[in-house]
Image 1: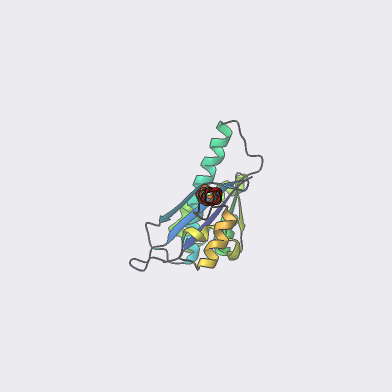
Image 2 (image 1 turned 90 degrees about the horizontal axis):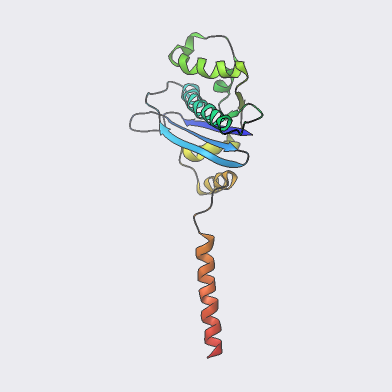
Length: 179
C-alpha cells in the first residue's frame, strides 16, 4: 500500500507569513520519500495552505505510483493521501466549484480529477496521527520522539557505536582480571 501524509503550517514563517508544506510517503510501513518546503505564496487560510501541500503530495505520490508500475511492481490499491485539514479533504472530494477557491483552482482540479478517476484516495487523519507534523513545525521533545518512532526513524545513536564501546570496555575488564 502506497500512502502519503500531507501537512502544512499556516503562516508559520514569522518574517513573511508563508507556510511550510511537507509530506512523507510510505510503501507499507517504510518511509520512501519526504520533503519539507516553504510555499512560494502567502495562503489566506489554513485550508488553502493545506490544499497546496496536498497538491504537492499528490504530484509525488502519483509519480511514485507510476515509477512502481514501470518497475513491474504495481500498487494494487489506489494510493492514499492523508490530510489533517477537513476543509482540504472535503474540497478534494467535492465536484462543485466554489467562488472562494478561484486562487487555488489549478491545484483543486489536479487533485479532484485524480480522486474522481479513482487514481487517488484522499482521507482525513486526526492531527494526533499526522506524521508530517514532524517536518512542518516546531514540536515538543515528547511529540517529536512519538512521531519519530511512528515514522520508524532511528534516534541517531548508532547501535554499532554503543556495542563497540561496550565490547572494548568488556575486553579491558577481562584483560585487567587476567593480569
